[in-house]
Amino acid sequence: MLLILLAGLFVPGPSPAEVRVVDYLKSHVRPGEPVVVSALYNSVFTAPPERAVLDRLFDAFFRIPLFVAQQQKATGRPPTLAQIAEQFRFPVPGEADVVLRIMESDPRVPRFLERDPRSGEITRVDVDAILAHPRFGKEVERTVAGWEGRAAPAFSARGDGGPPVSSDALGGTPHLLYFWFTGCPPCLRTAPLLAELQKSLGPRGLVIVALNADRLLEVPATAEQRAAYARAHGWSFPRVEADPATLQAYGDVSVFPTFFFVDRRGVIVRHLVSYQPPDALEAAGRRALE
Image (cartoon, rainbow, N blue to C red; front, top):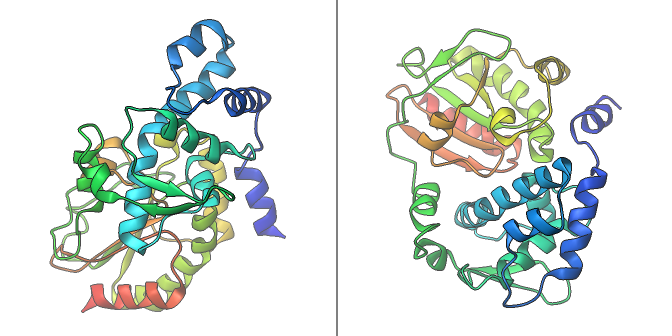
């Protein structure tokens, strides 16, 4: 029951403005015709809440290729529409599909995915096509680059209800950097597993640091709500706020949750994305402790 209450608290339903914008786009996207945001601003959606929705969709438009490429590279399969909706907080039914339709209709965007014509689900991702694109290429290359065996980038993050944490302070300490945001369904499933991982491997020296991306993603959750989330799942490890520099240093994290397991030498020994079962987290933590 507590998890249900938490999910309801942190995952708001669609606003009337978002429903209006998405319904309009569903009926006006045409193959081969790009959606011109400035035209929508000037002639269709003039109210501030509607323009805020357009801003968020426009931002997601340019981040979805990164997410799709990283998910494909990390798991060997493309994300589902439900996963895209979870990651980009698309609460309106069919919203993820219509954003993909916008991408497919725009001749400026490379044809980097194929979809099932009936279900709309992505069936194939061409990561090379994304890498070759002048706008997406460099970011995707950093996003899908192999992390294991590389030195963990330096970072410094202010505390979210606790003291700040930095890579200098973690020097010589095996640790897990866990990137998450409040209301992320895979993060919600992962949260109790982290408490168990701390009980299992914390006494052996593994430190978990939870880097929250709410502010960067404009998630409307308060510090008090994050504290309640942590208490509900038995977290006692450090919680900090991920800033733009840290997110960028770690490859512009676009899949949540993302895990970086770092050994005592400061080397990343395991990089995982999305929900992971307990045995995978345990094995990665043990590897960091070796």
